[in-house]
Length: 354
Ligand SMILES: Nc1ncnc2c1ncn2[C@@H]1O[C@H](COP(=O)(O)OP(=O)(O)OP(=O)(O)O)[C@@H](O)[C@H]1O
Image (cartoon, rainbow, N blue to C red):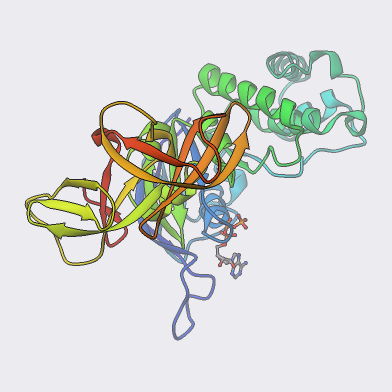
């Protein structure tokens, strides 16, 4: 188990270039012992770079990595006691499941009787007890990934588990089961777990803290509710939630911030910097009735999503998306949308103000 501290960390793959590009911009953050984290962001934002620096596969060009206060920056992966699970399971397909799980312990010269006990214990926890004698190449993709995880977990000195898109090759139903097992392992072993993913649902359902990255920077770090209710930036508002958050250009009029052409406003904070203003709100906050600010507009598009529909309403050159119960509206009809005050957020220069 370990608390991981990234201290003044940054990384350029070409630090000596005249104008080095930074895959990871300067960051100082602590990953708490025993917690679950998800690193979420678009392709190329620096997730794997960050994970590989934590694991020791990559030496950072700047800064330090501390495990429980100990500087491990110069240590390779083997000496960091990290278990890693990749997109493609790393297992020996010609060995049985038991041999695969035993291998890391054999390398550490653990006595046979202890190896057997440990392997059986881990197999039981991962639901692999009935598979121990099977050759690994005969397993399903999710079972192979469990063996891969088990090879990391079987060592008693593991500090953290780093998971780099481990569910990509897994069937949707089995993803749920694997996520459940991962959470159970976290609770039982109190291991720090970091999951890299593109998938917001996966991040939201796995991690207590989601670290959202963009262009090599951490743009927000927080619980699923925090990211949904108060995205720190426009990027987070777009990236978390489907459909994305509504952002409408706004202007200051006295003590109010108003969206021109719509009956939508919020109170202006006492102090405001210079720069473009926007009012943001989630499509999930929009209702057809109830207290709040009302916007009348024409339904220009409808997408059905199971028991709900996404409705696009246009008015005065603005487009608003709302998630409503299926069958709420007809294409081309005029409707009145209501947005409760509590659902409104003010943004300036793409960053949240209130
Ligand atoms: N070995 C490398 N040499 C040079 N540049 C690299 C190297 N690996 C990654 N990069 C660059 O660093 C940036 C961050 O890449 P990284 O792989 O960390 O992103 P990512 O968020 O993990 O992307 P993905 O989700 O596609 O795996 C990208 O611009 C990428 O092109």
